[in-house]
Length: 313
Image 1 (cartoon, rainbow, N blue to C red):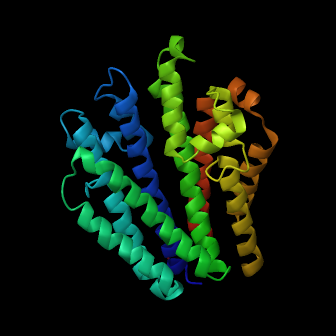
Image 2 (image 1 turned 180 degrees about the vertical axis):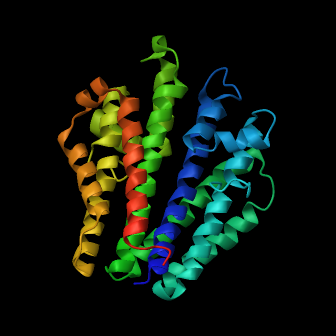
Image 3 (image 1 turned 90 degrees about the vertical axis):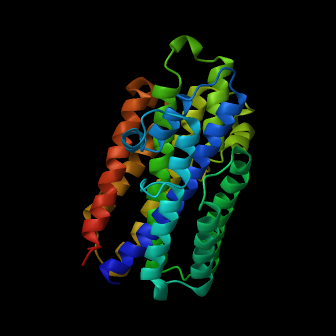
């Protein structure tokens, strides 16, 4: 496969995943603002930080407001990580690799772009936000479903899945990190109703609220939630699950091409770390330090995949 084709598949699914993740972050922010007594505009600063776009927002706006933050996250094309920018980029990459995709996958991607371009073509009213967020999540799910149900399990599939799970792992780790160090600055509030409400919002933002309750009977504890989102191999948005899929798909590529690359060793090392540690050791080390190291290694893996498979050749 040509490097630019692999690049297009990889980034197509990274952008689709990112669009859905940003929509979920907006959803979490809305839930927080609606349920928290005395919620302030600054609460949206944490959402912008989690999306890693606070610096860009501040450069474009003189002050922080919920309306501007939501608009920046959903539809501002000057923000490369806004939902609309991601859908644009995802479709552009899909068009570039059109012949590598099934008709069902391309049509699901194009229909997503057409609908969201129309919906996000104007500034949204607060009452419209839940429906718009649901539309983004549903459309992203349709793209993944069409792809998963119609594609051969070959190198095309592998590059797409690797892109999906590298992006997903990055998102989950950033959400956890922001909650731990930004949303709850006062140690005295740990275990309070505010603390519990914030954790519930985080779980909802990664579609883990109900599954967490099944495992932990609804008791919100930082260690349990960290364990669930980092180490639980059955949770499809956890770091451990993401790296099982990354390693598996990289393994198929190694067999297909008959060679191992530095990316394989990095992915194996990250998975081994996630398999061998427990949440107590992570908390003792420091959750922020653990997540910061994970994000760095995840970014390293992305760079090694780009270089190893010559994405731009």
